[in-house]
Length: 205
Length: 205
DNA sequence: TTGACATGTCACCGGCAGGTGATTTAAATT
DNA sequence: AATTTAAATCACCTGCCGGTGACATGTCAA
Image (cartoon, rainbow over all chains, first blue to last red):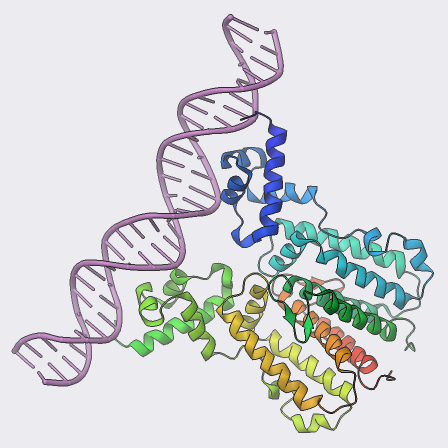
């Protein structure tokens, strides 16, 4: 074997990723990582310390959450000219698309409801910053009842999370095919409508 | 030991329930059930056959999903006189309360996104009947764009599920305290508003 | 009373998990 | 080339899991 710590560490981290993407946390463990990386497990302990630290290290190398740019369609400035409800709708729909294409993130989201591990903790913080930034960028100073907006947005993002997570294991939710583009377009239409009619000045609609 | 198969079977099933409610599927297994029930595990195999059959047996004895009456506030007839958006809002809020007080159901919902086991399968069917009945009872014949209603309701119930499930492990979601009555009241207010403005004849709001 | 059968007990298996100590061996330093 | 350092390997431990075979004993019918 080539003796190269950096390379070995990379192999291990990469194994973590592919393992999580494939089987999730249920089949995850030191032994599994070692096998997948074709590396002796003792090296994992030596280089990373153990599971929690390994996950922390892995967390620092990944992008588990959309960036502001990603959900703002690359152009935050343009969005700010639009009415708030339109902005929020766009952000939510882009958010849905963004998490749907992150298998590891979906896995973490699913596992969060079972057990709070290191990845969940990291994700939690990232997520918090993310939403703080979003509301600072787009909501601050707008004429809107804060509490209501927060509740509506929470409900919608929660729904998006749930459906995205669930779609990995089950194909439908109620009448909606959550594995097809068509299904998600219907959901986006609903999001659009909800934002349009429920967000903005209190007399909106 | 008292020799009484029926009683032993009950002890085992009861152990399944309390084990699921306490630790969920992650810590669940034949050995754990046997320990909890203070019964030799071989009896589980003898009387039930194995894990899947044990879960099936357990499933048949429980009420993991709200009944129609429970979400209709005990009086379906009265609801039908109201405008549709009001009916749906009431149903959704009662649904939220109903699942929040079913720890095992929340556990199954959480686990569904990880792995599809016997309980998940049973729950799936129950849930399907439930929503079919609801829409037959309250929506059939109303003047409403079916597809849109379905998408909005899916999004809302998904959000409710997610928040209820998540509240077991994490106390907040965004700005909302999902462990407090106050937090859920804010969510109910949002649900109410969304229904009011987004459900009904297309020109509603 | 004596079986027969069902209930419950005990001991064991193989496999895999997390975790560690001692040893080999390649590469950098002198 | 000799020595040191650390990367990698090997062998092993404990503990728990699902699963099974052999055995003991209470209950009920003949």
